Length: 448
Image 1 (cartoon, one colour):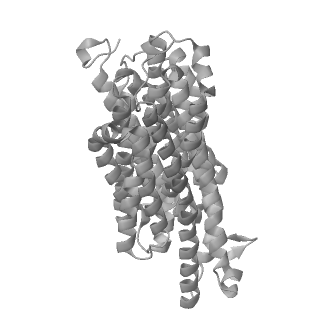
Image 2: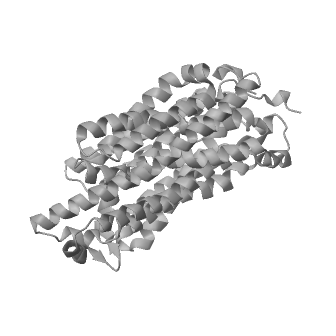
Image 3: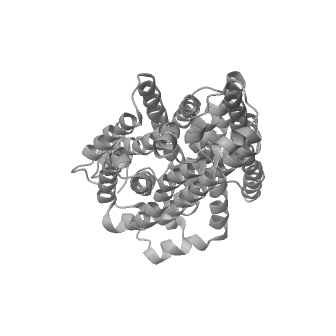
């Protein structure tokens, strides 16, 4: 049973909501800290930008693997057990990452994958958990919950920045993830979880799986691919890219846009969803993301980068939670399975984008290198950060910096194509709903 306060049901809704937020903070900290230390991984393991993209790939693809496996099991094994396993995975994955230099690059990939699996398990549990506990305001509450994704990016990013300024290395930065993982793990020990909304309503499992074949849901999957790449693709590279294009710590821009997203999701999501409807809000957001990303690709000064990052931050704010909200509101019979597929679709797309953006980064960097510098820093056709670190001639260093700046800018320019397409897709969806009397959530008790 569900209700509006903890006294109306047999589980502590507020405690579960807070624990879910902290679990999401843990996943975001892992993301932002990996973003900050990616260059350090490059030096530590002597890997190219494309190989650094593979590290991102492990972290991101662990997410869809876990969410697709775990999502349908929420109604079988229970959301409580699965969230406890996620906490254990976060702790073990972080420890193994810290120890990875002793075992080599494969251990770094394996430990990053474990963290990604834990991130996916968290997402597989908390989305249906919130949809179950707040059936009357799913999109709003999912936006409030997912405010703690950028909230965690801010926490992780600031910790990484401060620890870096104090002279601490990447291992200490990684260790901070343990704090959040332990906190949410302790919070859910002995805590009762509700059954999922779909199980509670008595919808058979076979009916849940059939919902994936609905034409509108298939269109939403396509949109999710593009929104996730637009949001998470640049986030994977913002630390490295803006360091090269603007010359300051890119993680600070990640922290800034994340802070902006936190405020907008936490305090404005409900008002904007009611004013524009979810499809309308997504169409408007796409315009902001398009302008911000394209401008970032030409932002070679801190001031311009700040304005562009602001527009991009506004644009990407509502993408992820609103897509989950539309899925849960329009396809409630799909329950935890469709929420899992939606999240997995987004992360698979973003995971593919990581190495592709890295390859674009390397390609245009090499293309802009003078031949005499290319001979020194390009080994076996790939850009080598270790070789680049050996350059001492000021002219060569300056030429490399300019090439990196051009290569970095192109990564954002390519991604900017996607929000342009999203503007038209969501605009069309909005108009279709308007012609049919307006967008409204579907209730399980209305579905036959």
